[in-house]
Image 1 (cartoon, rainbow, N blue to C red):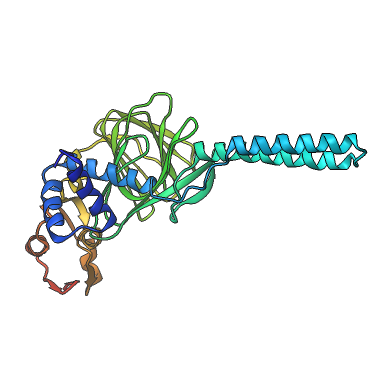
Image 2 (image 1 turned 120 degrees about the vertical axis):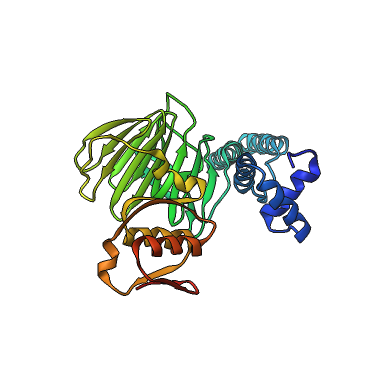
Length: 341
């Protein structure tokens, strides 16, 4: 369904507005699952539709009518002055003319620079710029793909949030991340792309990388190109290339870049869970985010047992079965609760 005609486009708009019938949804789901390109096209259309929503536009001032009115007032003032009328009346007329002209100029300015209103937007002062932020939130069990205003693409993992401007102004493109996201940044050497997360800042001009900010610990991994990582606390910087990773702790201490196996850090992009000598407590936290469940350890000693492996996420039951056999633990599931014996 590649916008063959207006009907296809109208179907997507019905989906966005929540007016689709079951037949529409079936057709849409089939098209959406065909490729990631379709997902990006849909997200782009949804973003544009949201930003150009329908708002009532005030009637524009009529310049001809206003000017004729002004001329009438001037002529009347002239004859009144000629017949000895108080000069203060002229001042009043001049004030009226000024207000009318200012109104026309202001209206034209508003018309040219008007932008859509979003209840989730907030005003923040960043680098002496006024930036209006949109909030993108992925809850447990969700993953979201979004096209940013500069055509960069962000993939947001579960239990994550991204704050980004409605449009990028000034010399930087700045976003704020809580959680985990994979960025594919549109190249622009004149306007660096900056991700602020935790106590660190990642600066690029165009590349692909993954940021994970969980439990006061941040990991940055580069998939393509290079990035610069700055610690706010220590002001130390590191430059990363493809395959490099650095970590920052809650004090802002930054490690030296090391080469890592990308498949463990980008597995979530392929709907997989990947762990490398990871404590079971962290494993279960990731399972909670991915499947929107809760876990409970009956013995604290089990929390620190580690596991290495990559799991498909299509079956929670299979994941729990492998964990149980590998770690020799009794792991049971009751509804949305997982109990580790």
